Image (cartoon, rainbow, N blue to C red; front, side, top):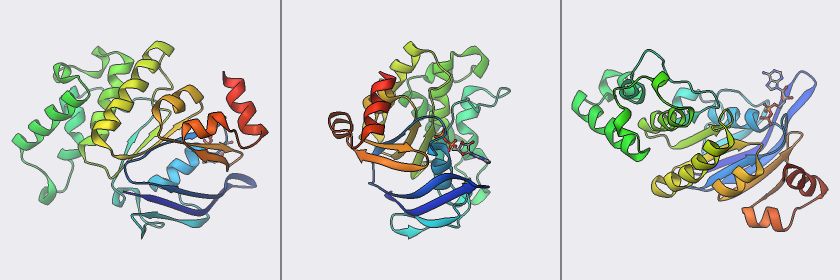
Length: 241
Ligand code: ADP
């Protein structure tokens, strides 16, 4: 699913959170929105998701205008910084959740759900945790389960907001490599928000650098790192190093 963002603006009162953003994301690409805190990354992600409406501009999925459409009609999957796993449900039940709440007409039968959940748990290499509860898993494992759950409904677009932000450095590094491998396997169009340039470099096919709601630079990791477009990008990448 390609994503086309055209002239998108969003204000909160007088504050300009997203400032005339134009961005084209290709099918199967893993794009990082990279920038300092408050640069509008999450707001842009939420606009793509349909969790927030832009004040002006349009969003297209595969060339179809979905600007006014509700989040439930966009076919997107989410992973957020803080695990949103249900504590009182097992891992299996958590991953199955999105399938079990579908309207009856679209709901797979029990055997198909079980098969699908186990396939997803294998994909994130955690099939052995199926009967455990989230509290019995590590933070990194919980985040992998959150990914499996997001993928269960076969999203056309996967949106990740600082998915590893709450984890320690070692686990983050491991999950970065792991997410990259997973993406190479499933190729779902993904947009990943991070303020961590190392994360963007390691994970993304493409990096979009944001500052004060606007795009400063857009390119492959090599292009952005080897040829920063302006002093902001240069300093931002340098300062984090
Ligand atoms: P980032 O993800 O780059 O840290 P955000 O998109 O979360 O940036 O936020 C950009 C700015 O918009 C922040 O300064 C934040 O305070 C403001 N903002 C975000 N959401 C709201 C909201 N619902 N109401 C008011 N201000 C908001």
